[in-house]
Amino acid sequence: MNLLPNISKTILHSFIFALGGTPTLAMWLSERQTQQPEQFMAYFVSLTVLIACIIFPVVFIQNSFLLWKRLDPNIDNKITKLSYFYLILNIICMIYWITKVWLMR
Image 1 (tube, rainbow, N blue to C red):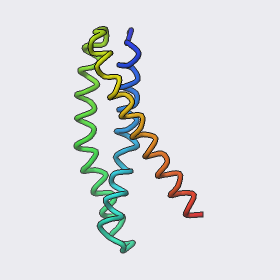
Image 2 (cartoon, rainbow, N blue to C red):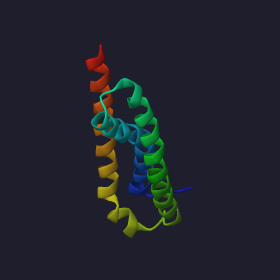
Image 3 (cartoon, one colour):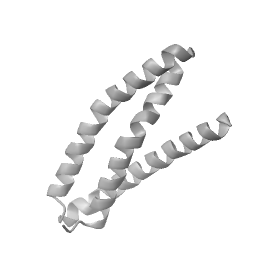
Image 4 (cartoon, helix red, strand yellow):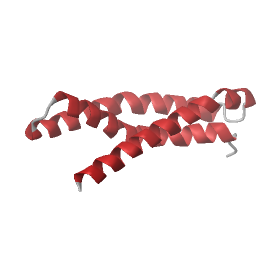
């Protein structure tokens, strides 16, 4: 299957964000909600599932559309910024987790 470069990058970056961004967003919200350790895990798991139920279908629909239009150069040019947006979100999430682990040492 042939994909144009920006379409393939957007599909990859959005999929990675759907997998890694969901727990990161849930962690940010959980930390803001409670400081009690016994409630923290309940909030974290609940929010992860809730956010995943929103993000995964959106990314799936977007990626299905991109696969359908995979050879359209107009779409490829229009989604360049979207690909970079997902890449920046992935980098932010990765930096957050690295600093979280680094500070826990």
